[in-house]
Image 1 (cartoon, one colour):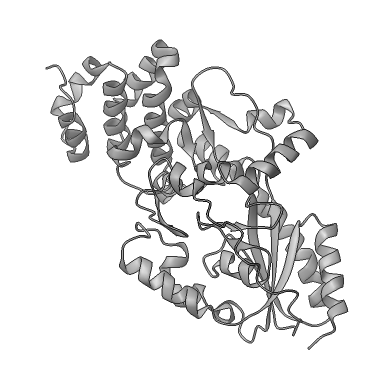
Image 2 (cartoon, rainbow, N blue to C red; image 1 turned 90 degrees about the horizontal axis):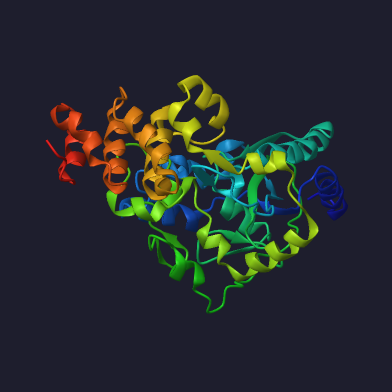
Length: 372
C-alpha cells in the first residue's frame, strides 16, 4: 500500500485542474449493485435503456475495465449555474448538465491525476460517462456522497449538481474515507414532485416514466407523458430542483455568479431551429447529447411535443412549423406533428395525412377527430 501522502498529492493535482471532490475506493466488484441492476432489468424498470444495463456484470466490476486494478480514484465536477431568464419566442429548455461539456472538464481533471500515476509507472484508465462502470456506486464507495431518494449521489453541503467519473489504476492507494451516511432523512420532495411519478420507491426510478430517459429513447414519445414534458427538449431536473440541499446550494451559487449572454444562448433552444435545420446542422449543434440512433428526427419529435405544450405563445409561428413537419419524410416527425396540431387546435392541417400509410401516423390520427 502506498503512503497516504501519495493520495494527498493526487487530490491536490485534481483540485488544481478544476475537480470539486475526489475520493479513493478499492477496485472491488460491486456485488450489491450487480444484483440491483439485474433485478431492475428483469422488472423492466430500465425501460430498454442500455448503458450499464447492457452488461451489468461488466459495469459492476472495475477489474473488467482494467485487469489487476487495485484502486478507484473517483471525482465530481460541479455544473450548477444560475438559471437565466427565458429567451423570447418559441423556446425549449434542457437539463443543466448539458449546458456545457462538463464531462470533458471532468475527464481533463482525471487525466492530470492519471499522468502523475503513469509517470511513476502505474497503469490507468479513465471512465467518464462510460457504460463500463456504475459511476454513482464508485462515488458512494469513495466517500463522495450518499444515495438520494431520487437515485442521485448528493455531496454533503453541496448537493447533486455534479457529473461523476473514475480513474482506475493498479496503484495500491489507501482508501481516503468511508461512505457518507444518508442525509435525506424523512424528506420525500423528489418523490412527491416528479412530474410523471417516476420515482416508484426511495432510490428506485422507473425509466419507463422518467422524462430524462424518454427524451433519449426511440420510437413514439409516450402519449401519457407528453403534456408533462412541458418545455423540456432534453433532460429533466425537477427531482434535483426541489431537493433541499440543492436549493440551498443554488441560492449560494446565484449570489456568487452571473451568466453572460453567451451562456444564456446555450440554455434555451429555438424550436424553429430544431424543426427546420438540416440533419448535419442539428448533429453539429446537439451532437454531445444522446440522440437515439443518432437520428435527428428524435430531436424533432421532442421539439414537436414541446411545441404542442408552448405553441400558443406564438400560434402563428407554431402553425408554420406544424405545417412543415406534417410533410416530413420521417413518420416519427409526421406522427408527432399530428399531436401538435391537435393540441394547438389546428387539426384541419392534418387532413392530408388521413391516407398516410404509416401505422404510427395512423395511430396518432386515431387519437383525434381529424376533419376529412
